[in-house]
Image 1 (spheres, rainbow, N blue to C red):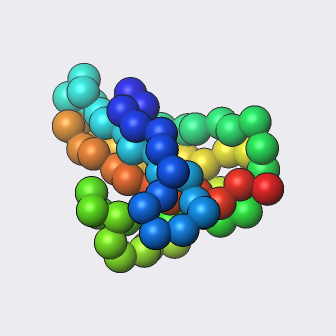
Image 2 (cartoon, rainbow, N blue to C red; image 1 turned 180 degrees about the vertical axis):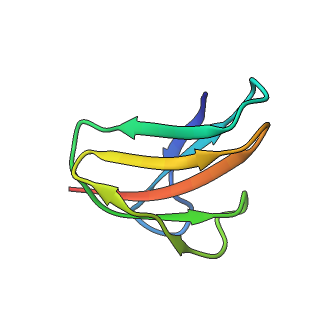
Image 3 (cartoon, rainbow, N blue to C red; image 1 turned 30 degrees about the vertical axis):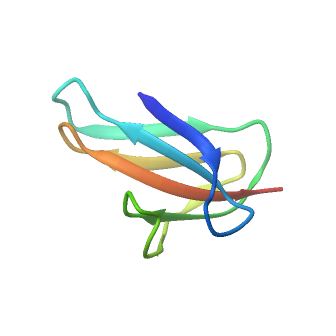
Length: 76
């Protein structure tokens, strides 16, 4: 489930926070209307930056049960 979409606190990026609520594991693919220039994963306070690979308009992350993932994206 997409929980949050908002402007990043520290830059021009867009924060997308996703939450796995079904006690399942597996990939989650997000598709955007614009090409993804860059994507990083941060903690809930938007600190740290681990690069996440994306392909064009798509980004896929592996989810674990009840995980919360915070992604900061820069879109074209």
